Length: 334
Image 1 (cartoon, rainbow, N blue to C red):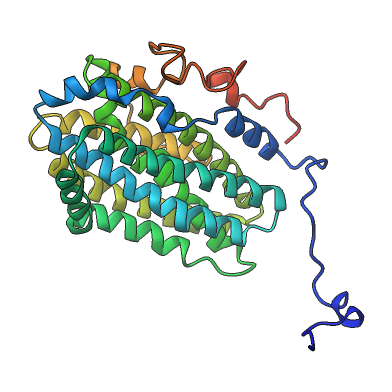
Image 2: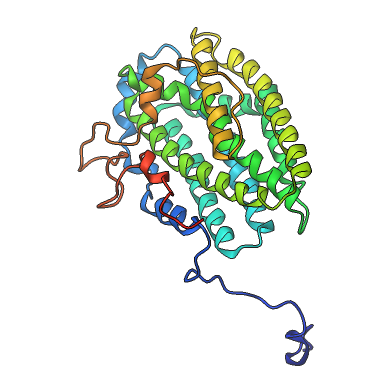
């Protein structure tokens, strides 16, 4: 049997490198440790305690569509987004970090199915996944993000930065029109355990958006002013396009509930948050966001039965919840 390579010529080709976590490369090890400390699985949350509440809940279809839309975006981030970012990023620690994030995105996508399986019939589940494939606004935003991911070119930092920008838009902005409803309901005492799953997902997405935004900023610093200005224009145009679509998606999704106005304010808040993760100026003026939903972003304790469920106050022993101080990097030499 003849091998394609021989001992004599293998070292003349590209050398394979092993990731070295003993070297310090910015904050990526910090983000890695934070994500690992947050490990959780949906089965550890007692969603079954929502069953009685669910049976009398008026807007079951809206709730299911919210979660199904989130499932699509997490599926995209699992199968395309994090894979492409990891593939084209040269820094090995960052590759490892994005691979880890991709695994958590898969957990997120499965978490919504866990809620579906616990609360819904098979017919309802089939119907809502069919709705995902037919909703034009949901499909549009997924296609726009996917287009940026699949346009990365080898050794092309401009296209790589654009993909980082798109990823932050997804994780820090587009998810939140969906996150709104479970947080809003949970804050009003409805579907509280399912809302706990969303709180755990938001905690992860906070880490993902901050980490991806941080690495985007490192790439952005290497560009000259002309390129930076061109990329800013490209980015704001993409955000505005996604925002206009998000308004239509919100009107379509929340039509029955009368909550569209509150959701849009929350969407704008998170669009600004995404831009801040990227180190860019915000786009929308400050406005009041529903305080119940804002409180739902907090990652400290909700109410839990320690022995029967795992919420965001108990994941792994001695884990501290995310606070603003978690992302205070002033003590690091960046």
